[in-house]
Image 1 (tube, rainbow, N blue to C red):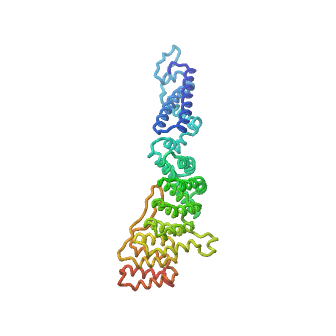
Image 2: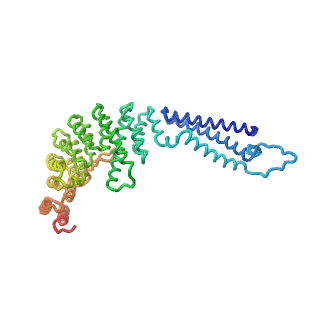
Image 3: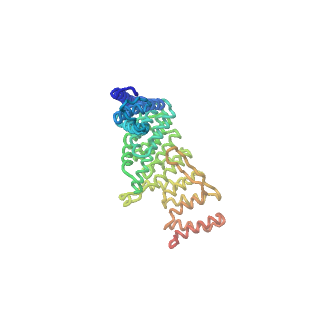
Length: 460
């Protein structure tokens, strides 16, 4: 480099820069459209960074030669040039420091131009969905499933493009059942996240708003239609259950008739349970009570199906908030149906069912379910406890069917929710206070305390 003329040095810098940007353009197009291996991407990008460093170094040397002259370049490279008779020696300088500053500036400018102009913002693309797209084009099933779930959990507005441009196509056209299962699971996660965000916006507790509602609207079009088609037309049980998970997460009232029909036709216990969980996910949509009540009244329903249906009724009614029109009318038929069926099923429930029922009734807070709570309390043996009963689902809301507590105490807490101003409950509490032979002293005190709080003129 020391012996080259300035023009030759400029030519070398130009050719290396051209090679860098040309290689970057071709390489990143390959990564965007064809690469199937993150390792291959890493090799390509490592080679590109090496060429970028080399071209920037030569370009910095050329810029320095233009600014400081040939002797600067020779001094930097350690070339000793004899002085002429009439030349005065230069004052010694740290030429390496000058070059370092030049190299940093040139490398920064060259790198930004390469990334933003030549490669079209590749660093942002690859840091977003680029890596995931490469993995999804590959053949490693476990990695592809993992990436789909990770994309569904990305925070911020990028989630919209991930859901519609990456996850949805994999759900629709994935080349294996396991990948499609993961894609539908991912859509369910996205839907549940957006539904929660929209709930916060409606309740006025959101810290930001706008894009979540837009994404929820989009999810209830093509993704929901795809989940409905999958549920109705697929035979593989794992895929059908994943489609139901997506339907549950997206939570659209349009799904309720489809789920109801599926519950009537399906003979698979696992699928029926998934349908009931999806109906339970329709929180606040009272139309979902009808098929859930049907499942509770169906003698062929398994104990698990009945437990999930009890949980579902509690979720649906417990999250129902009447709008202005509904508030001005009589109580909806579905809400009445919910209270009726909860009172009906008590005699047929085992311990687990009773525990799930009590937790569901606590969510409903419907005074018409007092007979069910009274029956559970009176029928429970001393010391009998409800076990904590929940379903953990990666990336999803936990299904908490019941909590760990004594069944009588749990029932009494449910009664407390409907006791204020309720003469029937007050009378029942008075009767229970007299059962000193059947109830523990602690329970008698709890009942007395509750009666004093809810009786007319009682302390709060």
